[in-house]
Amino acid sequence: MIKVVIVDDEDWNREIVKTFGEWERLGMEIVGEANDGSEAVRIIERLSPQIVVTDMRMPGADGVELLGILNERFPEIKAIVVSGYDDFVYTKHAIRYKAAEYLLKPVDPNELNEALQKCKTEWETAARERHPWPLDIGAAFALTPHKQLLRWRFNELNADGVRAAFRQLGEEWKRNQLDKPPALEGFIREMLLFLKELLIENALETDGYSFAAAPDAWSSCENAVAFLAERYTHALEQLIQQRKFKNKLNLEEVRHYIERHFAEPISLEQVAKAFFVSKEYLSKVFKQEYGCTVTDHILHLRMEKARKWLSDESIPIKAVAEMAGYEDVTYFYRVFKKHFGISPGEMRKKQV
Image (cartoon, rainbow, N blue to C red; front, top):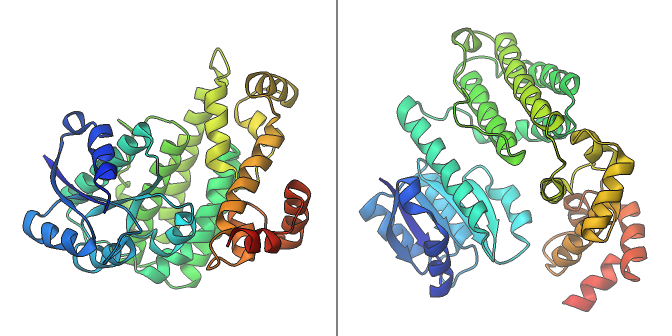
């Protein structure tokens, strides 16, 4: 059985996680609960769990401190962050290389169980392979902008764009002299895990999908890039087939897609293309179902998230704009003021 520890200073929050988790189906058991990070570490030392589900803000040792300890002393443990504060999106940039998933309270049962399944799969894969994780933090950060581009191209169903992104990534990987083991091995494993993330995000089944690297993929950077590009484009073909030949457009699936990708360069045209319908048809049926257009829904999501993030003075307004999907901060100011009637700075003063 996979052992799980739940960490939260509120008893009822721990009860929610315990109630929503499909523990028996997932082959898991809750072996301990803790009120803060210090108590959690003592339980972890004694019981050696494989998964930790933790809140971020707690008295004493908080979630950030706990994740730091896990990263340093227990790197094999998978962590799921459950946060009641929307500023967790900003925090995740600092801790994303340890936590496996980030969930907002109130916890959605489906999201919780998907995160638990993801952690179980990753832990079991690592346990079977018994390989160290050879990708250092500097190399991992170097992948971040390329992952962002790949996510955009993948969600656009742009196979040529995916291949071009991998060519660019391969050139940079060689330029930084990371084309030899163990960095090359870490590169392949990291990008295969990222592919699994993209599949899950797009509701594609991962069971039975091979995430093992071909033997010659390890031999050179060129082979690694070619292998990964082939894996990504093959997955993309599956996604296209799934969307293209569905008998009926699932508007809930469309809405979830928008909510997952609202901070990316997303538009009505892109969403329509991703689901193989005309933008006119999508706009019409979406408004009939939800009372607003796709474009208005994207704007609403961005503005509401931005408004909440502005309440945290530690997040620069430029960072809020970027997290809400606006690279041009001047344009963000203009859109925000038009939407709320006041500037982001005025909104921040009003909320503090």
